[in-house]
Image (cartoon, rainbow, N blue to C red; front, side, top):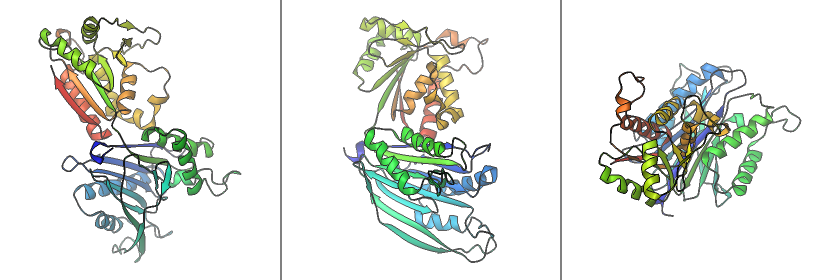
Length: 406
């Protein structure tokens, strides 16, 4: 699989320290529109709670902006180190970081400071790229006495199938003080756990792998996290495609073209809209049956049709999808994946998150019911909702989203 045909899946999972309302770790990721680079940062603020969160957010935001602005990663790291204060008592920085910069050709550059070492997995085996130590003398003398800091830089050519796993010390130190792990889970045992997961489930997604690592660390802490626990995973693999067809075409003569594109699509397929489902059902001669087992008081129920992975109502359901994506909390914490009674919007989101390239095929016929001024203000017309979903998926979830109209 050539690099050009590869998709860079980036995801993470995080749990706050027990009884803390805010996290001290920050995970940020973005894809540069100008050059296609994927930049990811994990920062761990000293301590926990709001103060730690402010420092880690500052660190991660600076790193992301510097690297995205084509400032060399080594220079960016030096600037960050000379900006952040140092704890005078412990003489350590107030925040750690791991910076990952991946070019479209899969050239990877990384800079690490005080986080546990990352794990690179290739062909289900651990790889050990060369790491170069970089000594930086702090220039911010107002923040602390002169203080040398060591960071580690590594660069390597990634290959399709590679996984890159990195985490905060809430993972490696989980279980510390317990009978089983008196000194914590430890980097080596964490790596053994990850390798076993990958070998057992070779196609495990970045999302699920990150979640399983964090959940195992939480188990070691007896489900009361002693620190913020964060794990990020980058997985380079073949893209997973999803088609969402919603709304009837403006011209009824184009119904057959919509059905042709639906049947010709090689990935997963969702129909969002009762009229849309009726057109496809009629033209293909395949019945559409509503599932009334798990009814939701707000979101209309799902239906089933041969050839479609999911059939839902249109505007109300897609509007709810946009709301949840905007909130982001449900996706980041993984509560949707663990919800056994998912409504139609939850199921659409689950499919979107587990795919990489999403294609919307949008019919442009106006449904007069959605223009009623007595309807809720948030009930936007179909095209606006789809554009909103596109923006959220592109900016926050690094998905490739295209919209085609009929």
